[in-house]
Amino acid sequence: MISWVQAGLLALMGVLAASTIAALGTSIGNYTLNRPLIASLFVGLILGDVEGCIQIAVPMQIIYIALVTPGGTVAADLRAVSYIGIPLAWAMAKSQGWDMGGSEASAFAGAIGAAVGTVGTVQFYGTAMMNLIWQHIGWARLDKGDFKILGKVEVVLPLISHFVISFLPVMFIVYYGADAIADFKEALPMDSWYMKSLFTVGSLLPAVGIAILLKSVVTKTSDLVYFAAGFALAKSMGLTLLAATAVGGVFALINYQITMVKAKAGTVAVDDEEDI
Image 1 (cartoon, rainbow, N blue to C red):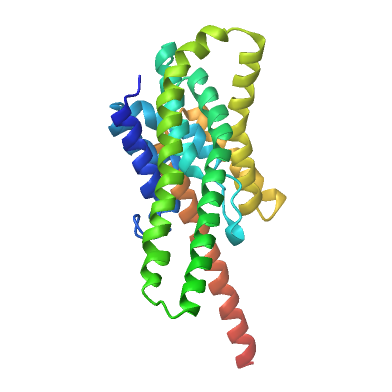
Image 2: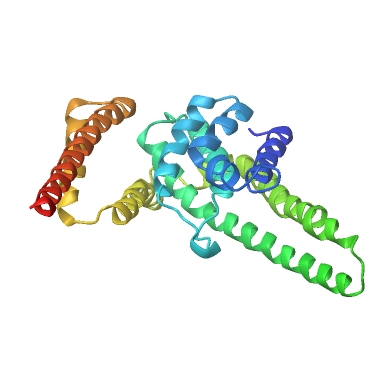
């Protein structure tokens, strides 16, 4: 279902997205190309189904929407979620004949996205460990006056180890994993209780992502009223994502203007008191 060439291109994207040198920095790499919704465009171009891959990526993006890496602590590296999870979820949905934006595909995408996140974590810390080894070798050689080693331990050797750790696992997992999907669907009937349990858990994971995001942005319990009203309004009116964003933007602008008016009024009151 996924050829060696496609698996290789997906693995190459995983390498580029996770490399600060190749991706021109962390902002373009980890915080852009690694994100499932952005990566789904490139995955879709490689697999020949941009729309389907974007639909598959939506629940994965929601799960990790509030993911941060404080102090270099990585709970889940999104290179695996994007460049392993999306292709495998897409292959499963395609083999089952599911609607890419349907509940079954979304639930499975959420479940597999959470599962493969740990693969990316192993890749991240494996790369970091190898970089420490190269740095140790560099310091030892510098003590002996060998300044030519700097370019090797800073650029060449880290890129080689990063390529091996990031490229090979993604390529093999995507290629053989997609082929194993056919055996998987025959061995595990989709209407069995354990598969239904998997889908149920997967469908709940996006809610966890939204909850984590709300926990980081909501400062008062009363603020939840606005979020609940927004969800109810969007659902009752049948708004698309873009339409809901436009409506939310209007309310945000109104709230901003009211806040500025209050702040200006407060400043004027203070000035009047100083004049008196």
